[in-house]
Length: 386
Image 1 (cartoon, rainbow, N blue to C red):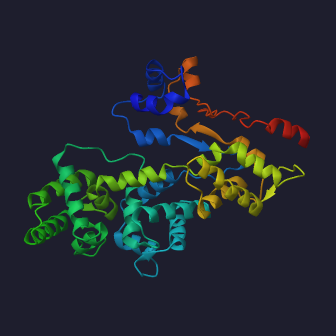
Image 2 (image 1 turned 30 degrees about the vertical axis):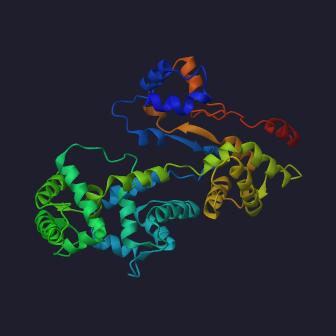
Image 3 (image 1 turned 120 degrees about the vertical axis):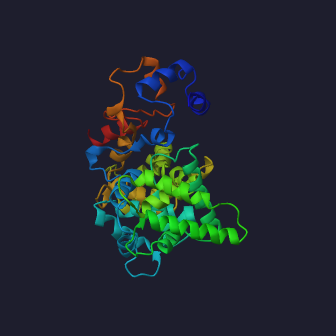
């Protein structure tokens, strides 16, 4: 952990970030071995000011909340809600309508961005029903562990074999659900696994043997205990290849506001030109055009340009439910926040460690009011009259 952070952040925090400081921060942040690195990285987020009525949603937390409600949900009911017209696809509109049914409320463009992320991972647009279920099942703050447990290894081995045979994990679940209640009993799971593995063996596929069936059942019984039925979400999470979960996490942890954060002075200059009277307010569409113009700077920096949905997400966050954007307030309010700050040690880190948690761009991991990070904003505000 410390070696990787020193390699990445060391050049930006010269003479500040040392191995000793890393040890102090480890204790301050309350970390432990083995480090759940996705959860650790996810806790430091670029946020806007909550004083402006923030509409920024943590996508991973939102889907985790959804998962908690769907883990014991019948596959039949789930499919009816996700795919109401029964065409085996889930459009972005159907996906947006699905979330509020489980009290998960995400603003429209941020829902569109989540849908686009899922689509890019599986290479489908629109998403199939089974791919939608796969993505929703696997999104998590914690990657699956590299377990040496033979049951867990067998479960993933069977999952890889199912996908290699051209099946989807939800489709196999349906095939084995002979009772049609949307769950798998342990007996249905055993019969289905043994039958399927036997078919694969006859097809000269030796990737999985009959012994795997007992191990997969053992693994799923650990997950569902003390119940005797397996839900679709539980089945997918247990047998899905680890790489799929890691891909989803890697993509979802990326923040669209990071581009704005890195190019704040450039964006401020573009916005100021569009506001010659220095009103600190621009219509949504004018602000949107300025964000689009930021793409040339991003490409010069070797960064990916923002697509249409990402630009609209930024506008949605900046406008905070309004038709206009108070752009100076938005840019000044941007800050990096440790969302788990309440879980850190009550002892403040040493001065050197505090300095090391900010890089050369002024990244602060405090939940206090963010400092004025943009050169020139103060004088401009004085020109505005306070």
